[in-house]
Length: 154
Image (cartoon, rainbow, N blue to C red; front, side, top):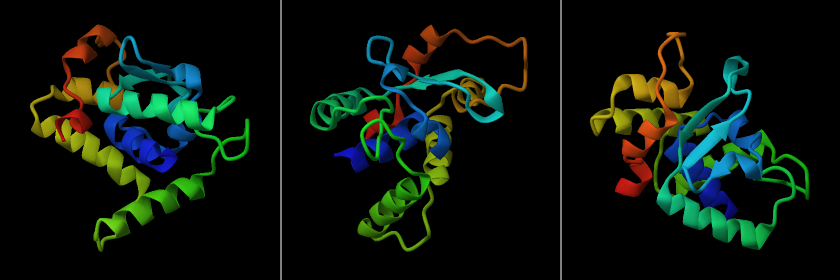
């Protein structure tokens, strides 16, 4: 269950591995269907979208694992390791008979690619990924509700 949630969150929210590892329980907003990324790359905060399918899994995960501080913990209250996430993704790829070496960051690329292919505005994708090159461009998080999460399309 934990491994499924990790893989699905990396893909469906376009998170970097380090961003996933730093998530707190409070970063998941099931009402607004967003994931808050605090101090991502470049020390910037941002929001990404949350899959409805994943939210159901995360609720089951929470009941089963009862994380204390981080959303994904190794030992109670301690951050899950980056190498464990790498191994989870590699093992899942192998189980799916994918011969190519698959890394967590490839799920982020797939998230962006699938959003672009489904017609999502490039500027919205940039904001979801944290690529905020235009300082004065603002996109309200309410507009994220109009973006169909790629995981929910599967």
